[in-house]
Image 1 (cartoon, rainbow, N blue to C red):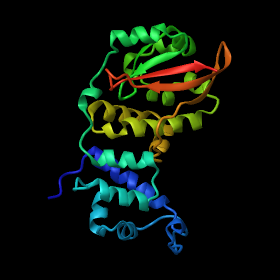
Image 2 (cartoon, rainbow, N blue to C red):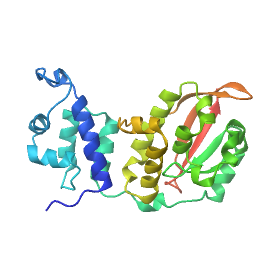
Image 3 (tube, rainbow, N blue to C red):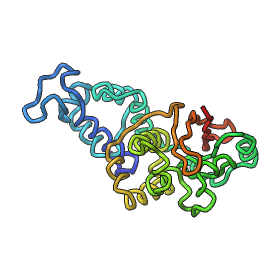
Image 4 (cartoon, rainbow, N blue to C red):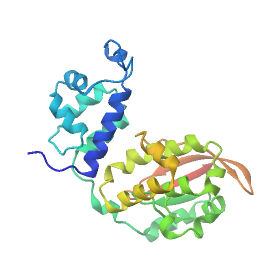
Length: 261
């Protein structure tokens, strides 16, 4: 029995379609297609190479809630030349719903607030939907508006795409925003069915043309610690190493730290 489509399966179908259209034919030993050249596969070609029926893959790409296995998804991922992060994203989208308990945390535990307060460098805590729940004084120095932002807008992804002050602080906003969004998809995109995540994406689609363009790219990338540069309005150019850790006793939260270089 084919069940109704869910937001997660719709995202899965859209992601697979985007990667199918971008797949390299020559990398798979296929001749160039008359209209697509070296780029893009048909659904029938993906199905044949993955060893599944064309109807099954068509239903999967249409976002239908059909039965899937990790083994079959792995075969599709190999054909589409997905990265490990993209493969994990596909498997999680096709699996059972993420634990909703992590989504419902709306305040930072006192011991985590004490932890970030004790740090001498900028640090803040985000929930599973990237709502900013707490921060320390060095972070308020780095991003002064954090204390006055409407709590409904105090979300890292929302601020990246809607706050012109933050955009001016990022010397390469286009690259930075794409990286953040790719990490958001890998980390939180599988919770697209929750009310909070769905509302955030709907607001951003309505508010930001840049977000609409980049969301349609379906980029997925795991977080890695890296160098970050800010152009501060008072302190000038600042360089940090960006880290993110998940507390063992609060797995729905992440502590983000900017360690000065």
